[in-house]
Structure formats: C-alpha cells, structure tokens
Length: 101
Image (tube, rainbow, N blue to C red):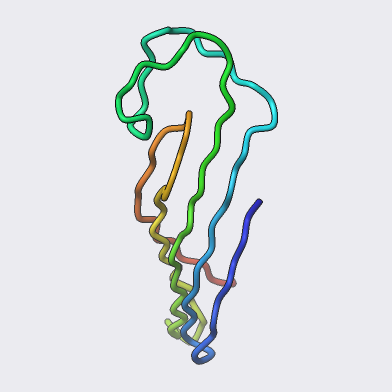
C-alpha cells in the first residue's frame, strides 16, 4: 500500500511524506539454511518459506522554478527502510526533473 501527505506552501514549493508498506501474503522460498539479514541481528534463517515485510516512509520536496519561461518541477526524495524483514535494506536519494514541452 502506498501513502502520501503533502503541504503546498506556495505554487512553487511543496513538502511532504510519502511511502509504502508491504506485507507478503504468500511465502517466499528460501534456498540456504545460512541466509542472514541485517534486520534479523545476523542470526541464521531457517530453511523453508518466509513472508517479506517492509515499511518505507520517504520525505519529499517539490520545487518549481521558471526556466526559460516554463515551469520545471524538481522532485527530491530520500528513500529508506524503517523496518524490513526478509527484504534488502535500501537507502538512497532520488532527484528528478519534469517539465512540459
């Protein structure tokens, strides 16, 4: 499930929080009895099937300056995992630009 809450402080600036919550509904096959994950405290995982879950809130900002008379949206998001189980830990910054032509 994805979620978003944002506030436009002006036509040119918006700040907010977006994110996603994932809960596996089916089991995932585990191939190794020694598989370890950062969130499990480096304890070995049992062989068999596991369900994945993750919570990813993301602060986001949109700035819209005029460049050559056109509005250009610059979008910045910091993507990170607050909690994860049976999923990769992923932290990264994403910046993008969007404009109408």
